[in-house]
Image (tube, rainbow, N blue to C red):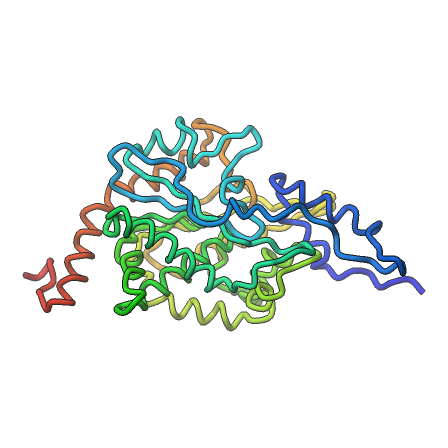
Length: 346
């Protein structure tokens, strides 16, 4: 008797394998030949974990920096490779790209174990725990070098945007005690550029189903992540509710993909995060159309790339406006602690 045809998500599980992760593909390609002594299939082999790609890394120091920009990848992404085009250009750090356009920006990339397949150790952290770790890494860095009050701008690709929202929710909740140094992250955050991040369900599709398009794209998955994204739309809805009270405090850009992402083998393609999910529910935010698919929307080949020009200009305006606005945030924050008046209403 022949085996049943694989479910559709088995095919969708191939979507997110970018060219930056060909080493991972080798393991899946050899799956049929990887059997134990009894002939039973075994999990595919995988390249060793690159622990050096986790955590916070400063890739551009900036010239007399007055703003910090932090980029966070999504599932199966990489701290640096996610932002690198096929020709090797990484728009976050190439001297002719973002550092040229915003020379006063210190630019960080942040990495975490977001792999969703493999037979070795997988991170047991949920996305909200990744958010807490992001806050801790960033808060420690800025506290130690005396830049806790410097304006912050986040860039989040795909589910990296959900990690950023979790980070800001956590930061907003820390008022005192041993985590008090986490709070400046929220107070200092001026803007967020979400790139292909699923924010809401709709049109008969649940938030969990949209997230499944993003997360359930490998045969071997991190069960903890999928439990939140695939089976518990409720968690994402709860996060949306927790984020709603603070979202008005940030300038927000919603980048959304125009083109479908090809499925493995070129048999078909899908728009991984539909426009109506990617642009969120925030009325005062600005949607930004990116003429690319879900993977290539954060990979720009050079300074003449029209999509790159859309993105850097939005970021540059945020960087210009951030200083005075964050000063006001800190006046309000410190005033609330001492009972001082609102700076706009002396």
